[in-house]
Image 1 (cartoon, rainbow, N blue to C red):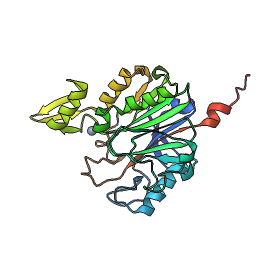
Image 2 (cartoon, helix red, strand yellow):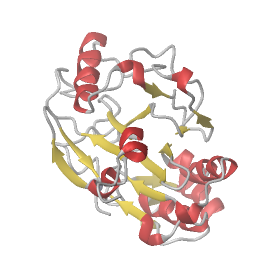
Image 3 (cartoon, protein in one colour):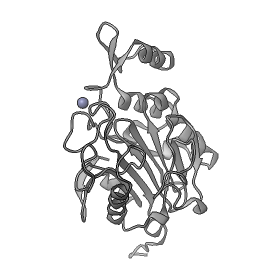
Image 4 (cartoon, protein in one colour):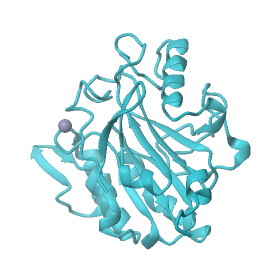
Length: 279
Ligand SMILES: [Zn+2]
């Protein structure tokens, strides 16, 4: 199951065609074809970064229309680099989709078995997507280094287990983020990562006191440890810092930049109601 660029009605974004065939919408936006000005040019979807609010909302509506949906059907979490998981119910629909105040507070992962769309924002941190086709449940996690060492992906799978989901049935996808080519960390962060993961080739020393960190690899290790099958993990391996035409990067742009959006939504109409023409 491979990530691919797709040119939609108005925007270009990344998706996994095999997941779409299984009845789930999955996407990761690029920075292209929006209306925001520098340094947010142009499809900035983050309301919290200092961009013009009306332009961000125009960009969001463009993103929603790509999925044939409205803000009322989307939910957003606050994202605080923590590890709290929130189970989204139908009454949450619309929270955070057009303003910051109504977002689900203090959560970095969203899970649902409804057809509310889950959206999160990124500019280097790693999005991890989940789809358990057996219990028809999806999730999205925001994994920077803090979420990664806090084991946010384990927290999502624990929450799905409470709903009867087995990790061996679950698909996982790791989207674009800052890669081991560009993500330099210092001794202090490296020590915290080692305290959780031990010595690892995913923390590579480069020069005195500096290391390159592989967040994709660390999250993959955790997914496998939690019981997800390796063949069910799709890694995008596109670095947000290297690909300046396609992506915003907090590190590369020294903090002044926009945000891309992850998108995941159960297509319940397709998942439940499509009749087998042969039956
Ligand atoms: Zn890179």
